[in-house]
Image (cartoon, rainbow, N blue to C red):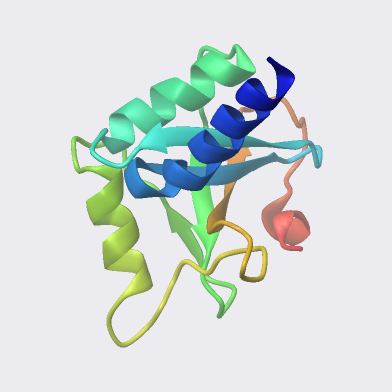
Length: 127
C-alpha cells in the first residue's frame, strides 16, 4: 500500500507543472513557504490563496524583484496567473527567474508585505 501512495505522490508532483505554478512566498520576517495555484486562476485568486494560507485579512504588497533589482508589484486583477508569468518570462527582458536550478521544478519567488513587520524593509527582502 505504501508504494502505491508514494508512486501517486511522485506522479502528482511531476504533473503539477503542467497545470499549476509554484511560488515561494517570502514574508519580510524571512519566513517562506510554497504556494501552488492553477495556471488559469486569476491574480486576484493568487492574492486570496496567499491570504488564506497565511491566515491574514490584508496584503499590503505582493511583488517580485527583476534581475536588475527593480521591484515589480503584482496587480490585483482578473488577468490569469499564466498570462502574468508568460509576460514576465519572455521577450527582451526576462523579469521572473526560477530560484532553484534545473532539473528541479520551476519555482518563482514572490515577496509578501502583510503589514506585520513594523519597519521599512525595502531592500532587506533581496536574497
